[in-house]
Length: 234
Image (tube, rainbow, N blue to C red):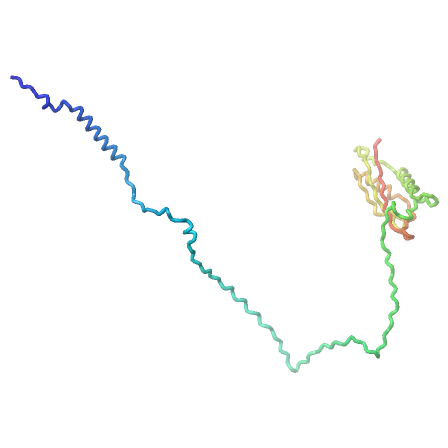
């Protein structure tokens, strides 16, 4: 006789279901264990404290200790010279400057003060009596005659420097000189584009003759005079 199993007594019929349920339970436990967090216990703070109460809190005063200044250095002892009684000390006698009525008063003669002759310089354009160029003594307009004689003197003594011609240098040289109180020429100064042209201008002015000095209020004075000398290549 063949034995038949009861389907309810078969334990393997729901094994797959039990496996799935067990696997889900194990995975849930593992996930819960991994996600478990533990926080440290912290103190509770009172966040309701007023800030103004903190600002009104009295701050204890701290006393500043001042270091006393160092004492001043001791003063150097004064050297006292002891004079012996036997030594004689000369006394300074101050004579009185007051005069008595018995003394005669000496009259002082007048002191002659020598006049110091001032070194006056008056420009040619404003001087009362212009310097007289030789040959202009009888001219009615001595200023115009002076100018004409100066131009004639420059044309007569003019010589273009050869080195300046070779270099092609040309231009105007401004010359200033002073007619001294004795009529001589001095204090010659010049400015131009080349030293060779300046040297030629100096040579021309140094050849000027001695003149009759200019006068201001009847006194001989120095008279500065300026004139340009133009060097132009042909």
